[in-house]
Image (spheres, one colour):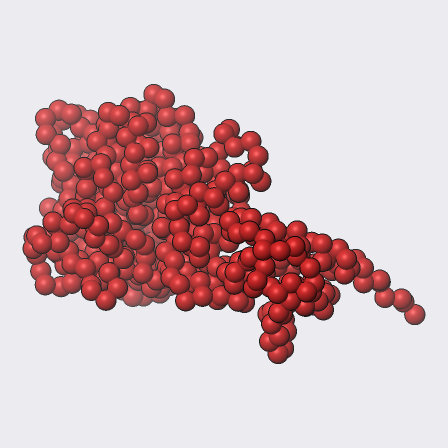
Length: 435
Length: 100
């Protein structure tokens, strides 16, 4: 099984990919493969790295190279030189394949039309994805196509889902959307890489996107745009803690949508998905051996058996808490702020800040203190159309926090910013983040 | 021979500094939901003013944001003020580290 074969054998006539300038139909695949025969035979059975900031190029390269290459490393274009060389060496990559200039020591192959005879497409390609890991040190994770598409739902019948791509395609979350569209019988809509969020939403509206996947932070930004005309039937969230607040806001804005939040990571693959409209997951799953979920007693870290039916337990780096018949996520175990010996999870304070009406985005991080070691500090984006006096609003935010949080958790400093720094994976960056 | 510039462009002069610290003290006290126990004077004992130790840590952080320095980081031997007057004096002592 390979991507090319799966993409070529789907039922229905919906395009595979829709970009700003062209579409890729199933019927185009054979011709696309044939016209790249030369470079495909050059790369057959080799260990390659794909590197591009153009998702349109990357999508087609992945379709054509799966099953031909022994190994494909998805190299993020924005990594620094040292990390790039480390990834290339650790993966024993032989060639870098790109549509751009890549500054590295290996030969760079331009993936372009070239005559030749088609190689066999019978390799079980190893897919390698970099991740920042739980300690912040970048590392490589190996997958196969089977492990990557384990949770793809096949669409039945003629209704194929049109998915918009909001994530970077070379990252795990973006790949999940790509595979869902390609292998699940749907369409992937790829906006131009330089499009702003508002432009992306316009493009999705024009192309009839009905399914979108993003981080809660991205969804909060989407909610700040005019979403009229965007008729979503499927909303997927992942990558950060999904609070009841964001779920409720999405249910209200998109009443027709099925809302799913996914617990997944590049290392663990997809852990599980929840579609009952509630944050966290059912505590009953901890008793279900087929789920492979367990909580460490010492500190409440969630452990996952990878794959679910084996005995290989891996720490997720995420802290959880059982409240009644629900398990809630508290935050990254290495992300706590220490205020005079008292531990504060930034995610808990962020959730309280976000519940304050007028606050649209929030990031909480440690501030160094000569007296207590650290203090809680917050950067907040406010809705200027409802907040007339920011200085007065700051007092209101603090009063709101004091009603819900013990003293040392209330932010010592709140700065108003125009936007939050977001990582390439779409997650809020907290200053002092280690991963 | 060039004369050095007067130091009044850098840091604050005593009266301004005391007034500024007092204003920020009241601001932090209010945002912490505290109440002033008795009028603030030079002799007021810091931890009896209504602001607790966390509150003082926050005040010091806010002052660093305003002034550009934290005297508790700059001092060689730790000297912890007991009265409000001593607190202000420490800020004056290190005021040359302030931003211009």
